[in-house]
Every structure is written in structure tokens, then in C-alpha cells.
Image (tube, rainbow, N blue to C red):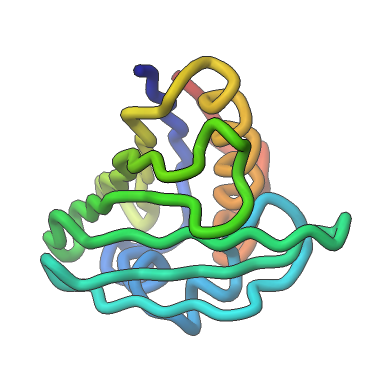
Length: 154
């Protein structure tokens, strides 16, 4: 199994950014790798609560992911299971991975570290990295941070 880590510095306090990661109306503004719309977002951000997001990509394909919140520590950490309900690669069907967001204040900004672990293989890691990079860029733009500002991948 493999994992990916992306880091963004975003012009928002951790508490504001945490809401963007946990409220359905906020998820709808940034989720998905390209400019396609989020069709619906549900989130019950408490340990044992569930999330579900369906989005359409610009090529017309639709994807849906869901999972359970495993850790909810406002405004510092969020971890959840991740499973493709619809979409993703054929090797992703029925596979559960782990997604975590760490938020660290830096002045009036937040360093957001996304780690998606327990991915099947390098193909899965590369596909998820591309998707999450697009989503993180949209999230950064949502708060007035350019997509290339303070961008790193590990």
C-alpha cells in the first residue's frame, strides 16, 4: 500500500478552514479535481458520522465517494475512511483507504496537510494525487490564495 501527502498554505484561520472541510455547503465550493460541479454533499462531522460527495467532472463523468469520520478535532485534525461509491479506477472498487487533514496556524494563514493513505498502488496514488491537487487548488482559490502559492507535495 502507498500514500500521498499534499501541503497548501491557505489564507484563512484554522477554524474557518475546518468549516470548509466539514460543512456540506462549503464542500460544494471546492471538492473535485476540475471546475465541474458538486452535485450533492453530505457531512455529519463527528466520530462515527458519515460523509458523502458526488461530483461531475468537465468530461461529463460522475464520481461519488463516501466514508466515516474517524477523528474530529476542531480546528486541528480531521480523519476519515474513504471509499469510491461510483467512479474511481476498477482496482478501487470496494477498497477503503484513509484520508486525513492536519491544520496548523501560521500567522493569519493555515498550513493544510492532506494525507491519503492505504491506497492500492502507484496508479491509485497518482490518480488521487491529481484529483486532490485540483481540489486543494480550488480550496486555496476559495480563500484568495493562488494555486501555486506555497504548494508542495511529498
